[in-house]
Each structure stands twice: as C-alpha cells, then as structure tokens.
Image 1: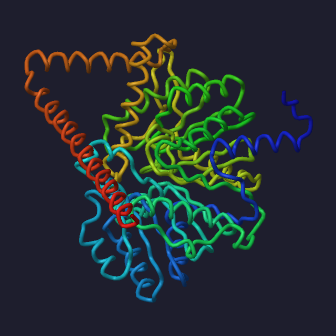
Image 2: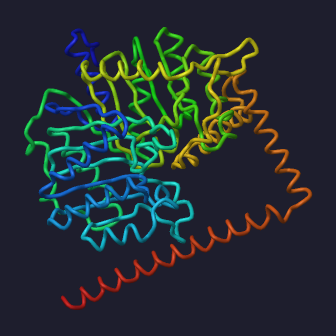
Image 3: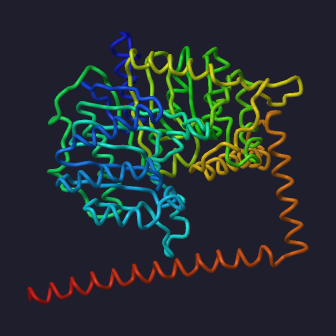
Length: 488
C-alpha cells in the first residue's frame, strides 16, 4: 500500500504525475512564453515569424476566410514558398465551407504550398463529418510556435469603418523545447490525412535549446482521447482558491458541471466568462438555460459586452493556466482534434488573472432573480445585428442540444436529482417530442422520407465498406499465395 506524501516536493511530484497522465503530455521545462491578446497582437507576430522563415512553415487552422485578412496570409505564405521554404497548411472542411473557395486553395497549391483538407465528406462514412480539426497553430523552423483560439478572418480584426469591434481572443507564443511538441502535433494530423512528414524535418525536444524558465505542456487532443477533458476535470477538482474560465461555446457535461458546482460550494471562487452576442438569437435562451445549475451552486457567470468573445482559457490558483482551441463542450473534448498550451508558472498565471479581471470590466454578471430566472441587470441591446459571420453557429446549436439532452436523459432514467434550473429544458424537450408525435400522426411522410434516406445510406455504406475490406483481404491473400509459390 502506498504511503501518503509527507513533503511539498513529494506532493508536487504526485500532482505532476497526475497531470501528465490525465493530459497524456509531459511537463517540459526551459521555455519562453508570451501572451498575445486579440488579432492586433497575434496576427503581426504570426506574419513576422512567417516572414523570417528559412526552412519550413506549418500552419493548421480550423477556418481561413477568403477575405482581406485571409488573402494577406496567403500572400505571405506564397512569398515564402517562392523562396524555397517548405510550407504546409491544414484546414478543416467544415470550418472552410462557404468561407473559402476552391480557387483560393488552388492558388496556394499552384504557388508551391502543400495544402491538405481535414475530413471532407465521404459516402462511406456517414458520421465521419462529426470529427473536426478545430486546432489553431503555427510553427516556423522549429524555433517558434503559436497556439491560440484565433482562426484567420476579418472578424478577428474588426471593421473600424463600420464601427464593428474585433472579436476578443487569446493566443500564446512559445519558444524553446516545447516547440518540438507543437510541430509533432501538426505532424500527427498531417499523417492522418496523407503521407507523413519525414522524421528528419521534425526536431526533437533534446535538439532545441532552452529559451527561458517556463514549464508547460502541449496537449494535442485527437478524437476519442479526451486528454483535455481529463485535465479540465482534474483542475476543477483540485482548485483550492480560484478557477476562472473563459469559453466561447460552453456546454459542460454533467460530470464537469458537478465538478464546478462542488468547487464553488467548497468555497472556491469559480467564474465563467461567456459571450453575450450570437449570430442565432434563438440560441441565447438555450445558452442561459445551462447557467442556472452553476448559478445555484455559487458559480459566477459573466457575459461579454463586445461583438464576440471567442477565447478558450482557464487560470487556477494563480499557478496553472491554459490557452488554446478547446471549448468546454462535448464536441471539443471528445470529437475534435484540438491543441492547447498548459502553463504551470506563477508569473504567467498572474498575467492571465490580470487580463481576466480587465475583461470583466467589459462584462455583465448574470444572476438569478427571486423566481430563479436568469437575467443580466442592465444588459446592452442584442448585438447579433453587428456580428460578422463566423464559424460558431453549429457549436452553439450543439451546445444547446447537449444541455437539453442531459436534462431529458436524467428525467427519463431517474439516475440523478434534477434541479429547478432544468425545468425549462425539460419543458422544451417535452414540447419537442409532442411536436414530433403530431408530425408522425398527421404527416407521416414528412419524417418517413428522411428516415428512409438515412437508413438506406447506412445500409449502402456498410455493404460498400465490407466489399472494400473483402477486396483488400483477397488481395493480401493472393499476394501471400504468390509469394509462397515463388519461393517454392
């Protein structure tokens, strides 16, 4: 039986082991980090790094928009490709759908840039589109790496002439041994969708000189690994004084919500900063419905008063912080490729806390009134009319669906006590089922035809994939027989 730790050093060693196992990422010393706020600090740093590239550029972004901002980056990357720099880009099919034309990508390819698309639709994979590459990273020459929540588009820079503010977001610049981990994360996805990067083009941690004294982890999540979920859950459980979260599309699972509630009830100062503006107004009440269970337990929820809050960050106890692409929802935790930097440094955490407090000066706290209704006192007018079209609508819709699903599932199974915060979600779920029942009763074909198409697609897919597998097995068997005959 293991004896309990009795020194601070032993406790920290156990904590490090727990974090490493939860995240699937070791703590790496000797790095220099720089916190970058919004596009005005991130984009110039990215472009400077691209301009200084000598050997290779690896750029992975969920969405690159074909606007002035996207074309500016395309021109910079084409310029380096003409100089002989190896430029590789990964973009997500869903993230780029309707935002970037084939002409944009063909221009890059024609200029010598290697471009790969993550997970375009396939007939033999009906649900494959659910997995997305939601990462936002850039690495140059194994010398500098950037990880952030920013995609590439004018909404992050804003439109001053129309008085549209830029989206609020955060990124981080990393120099030192951990840049190797950032590049390995890129190489992992690159190999998932094509021929891998040759090993000699990727530096190892040991080959990179130390650039500072900051310890950090690079958490590179892929579908079904849930490394960031385990780490977020662990931090929510271990926080002793403060846990301040910022999230663009919050929809915490039941387990994570209970962890936040337990921390708040235990006296931890738990805060959640979320957007107020949305490009789909009907989703706002769904988003707020998910805040009730948090508010009832003492978690403080704030809504950003600007155009759009897109950052995904956390800072705990003035010691631990993360910046990256992972939202606090089931799609990010379990279904996507995500990338985050987890920093364990008091100076950096203090900087994150100061930025968080500054953000709260432009936010409105959401509270419960005497009738347990969620409202924001003196909230500004709806801001959806000044939103520039982004890529978060699907995420918000999924977030609302998850909240309703959690409440309805709990009501059916009777496996946990439902709180007053979930009354409205259960009413909404009940109304939805009644509407579906009415449609089936009076207009059966309205729902029968879509179901026919879905089931037919699934059946054809299974037969097609079994046929491909049969052909592959037969070819291998025939090759093996030929090989034995040639030896005999």
